Image 1 (cartoon, rainbow, N blue to C red):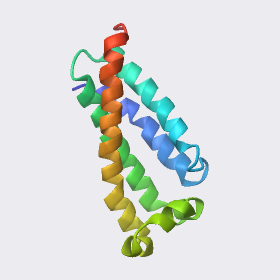
Image 2 (cartoon, rainbow, N blue to C red):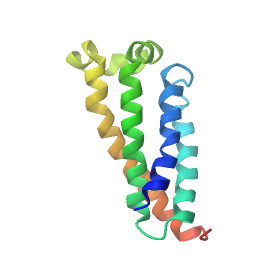
Image 3 (cartoon, rainbow, N blue to C red):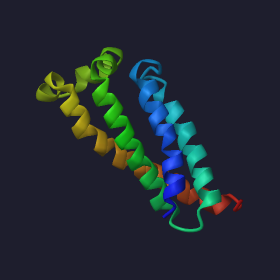
Image 4 (cartoon, rainbow, N blue to C red):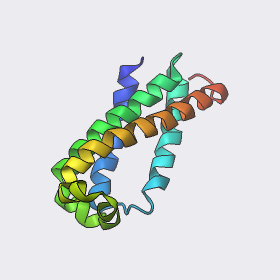
Length: 130
């Protein structure tokens, strides 16, 4: 495991955490994440010598910590800019959006970790080592 690169790449998650609070609309957020995942996968493939999937997975887990923390801290602003998402939450979670973020955030982190892990593994087959 390359913890240095994991934490360095997780800065994108920290930036996105703040950017998604009020700057980046939910409709275009996936495009930003796709570009970030492709970039991270290429960097992981170039820098790491093994465990590409696990390194990518861990980047997303650290991203999840940043994102959940920032979204919980700025929950009022986040919810006011993401009303569609707030409306889709089931009853109790809609009343307590911070709890909803705390519960759904890690699930999204794991799913995105699998995606970034696969991107990293695939990139390792095509990218030459730096």
